[in-house]
Length: 203
Image 1: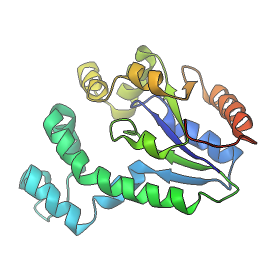
Image 2 (image 1 turned 90 degrees about the horizontal axis):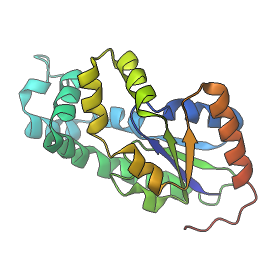
Image 3 (image 1 turned 60 degrees about the horizontal axis):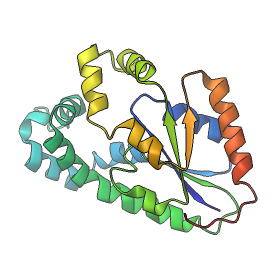
């Protein structure tokens, strides 16, 4: 069965869409790049590279990584954002590529939730890509509420990513998420129905 990449912009609703897929296909295999990144940040070799790149200011006096400080730095500085991605994303890519290969002969779907799918050329490992999108107004409102940040900070976070319109242009499927969970669930149901029974070849 296919490897399907799920991506989108920050606060467009990827996680909610993934939950819809989990409800509809509970036996499918799911890979979460954010969870993988979170786990990687605890590895000594990754902490060493972060300390070398960002300095001791992103660590507490006890030696623990201050993820809030690190996040603030990378959202404000494109060069630092790229540096962190170069530390994390080759490792994440290896993990999900291995899992996708392990499930290539499985009778069930493999879904990979990869926020920076296009930025890291991860689409080359997918049979199909779904972009979860919404209007800029809705995205901004959701992000401000979720992160408790001001309008300017939210816009900075959004602008630090590849433009959502570019992701939409490159997608195989677009899920529009200006509404609520019911609409997402129905779109997920329609997509799964369209995928079942297909002969899977990469585009």
